[in-house]
Image 1 (cartoon, protein in one colour):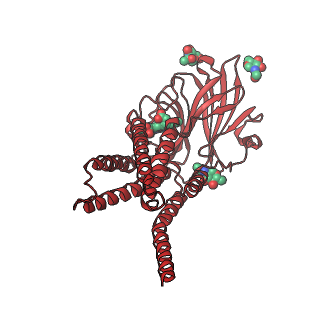
Image 2: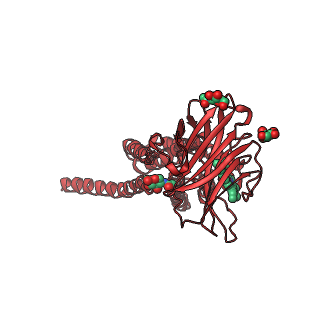
Image 3: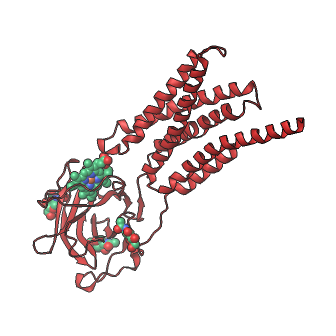
Length: 379
Ligand code: HEM
Ligand SMILES: *[C@@H]1O[C@H](CO)[C@@H](O)[C@H](O)[C@H]1NC(C)=O
Ligand SMILES: *[C@@H]1O[C@H](CO)[C@@H](O)[C@H](O)[C@H]1NC(C)=O
Ligand SMILES: *[C@@H]1O[C@H](CO)[C@@H](O)[C@H](O)[C@H]1NC(C)=O
């Protein structure tokens, strides 16, 4: 059983690790079209990890300027309804405070519009505005399916490491830019060291999320089902010890589960409303806590073995126990699904359930065979 669980866990972890396949050609090989009049190109470049975007640049620290060419694909003429933006945020790491260069295809004449826009709140409409640093030579062109934004920027405070971000989004019917999607679309930012060209991305998953994940897998995914399995199958093997083992497993699972839930709730409480995408995961978690609390406290009301109500208590106890295990495993997979969006997440879930279902059948079969062999040997 333990073996099966650890292999399921390993499977679960390996298939859920995100893969980072670099599909776009590296930027160093890129040649700017002659019509763009950039005969020397740019000394440095970086393939940005979202939207297949690329940043080419020259940084001159003695005159504190940064010449950039930001390339963003998926902008074929005709794809009218997309805006793209590249920005530096001199004051913070997130979106608010970003000083943007915004470009899009004009819906009127298919020309490329490019302008600057400072973001002061999450409700921004990307209105034209003056940035907090000087921008010269701002222009944009469409080459193949890419929009390329050119500009020369006076680097704020001549910092060598800049917080820069890039994004794309659509327009509403009145041609006002509307927000980019949030899920998986808000990691397109990072600190760029202009001298070394090293881009540092924000953590994919907030560190607390891992603690939440590990604790809850241990609790609802391992200890809780194992404890139930002990009660179900080891009664004959360990006639007196099974009960203590069961209590120890269930109680430690409960304590860990409460800690995991608390971390989960804490993780989402400080953020804007957009950060809690998976309300059902949250509510299943809360229901699990209620079920498990109910289950633990109901042991105090357990009737004596010979009592006529004991049978009902047992039925109730088994039902709630199974429901808790089911929901717990389900919620683990549900959480993984929200995080990595891979359907294979359900494989371990289904495996455990198949094993769970079969374990009872196998046990019945085992006893049936043993019984028939002992009764036949008695004849
Ligand atoms: C119409 C314009 C825009 C609207 C309405 C908008 C709205 C939002 C909102 C509400 C969030 C918070 C999401 C959350 O809390 O989960 C967000 C996050 C973010 N946005 Fe935008 N956005 C816009 C344009 C941009 C642009 C132009 C950029 C980059 C150049 C950008 C980059 C980001 C990034 C990196 C985040 C995640 C970091 C953070 O939360 O500060 N956004 N946006
Ligand atoms: C990036 O490019 C690859 C290969 O050209 C493509 O499969 C992928 O969909 C692109 N990603 C985005 C976000 O456009
Ligand atoms: C920086 O700009 C100054 C003044 O234009 C120039 O003399 C110098 O060569 C430039 N440095 C680099 C690394 O391009
Ligand atoms: C931008 O440049 C102008 C003149 O070129 C200068 O007067 C102004 O102070 C600069 N602004 C910033 C924010 O550097």
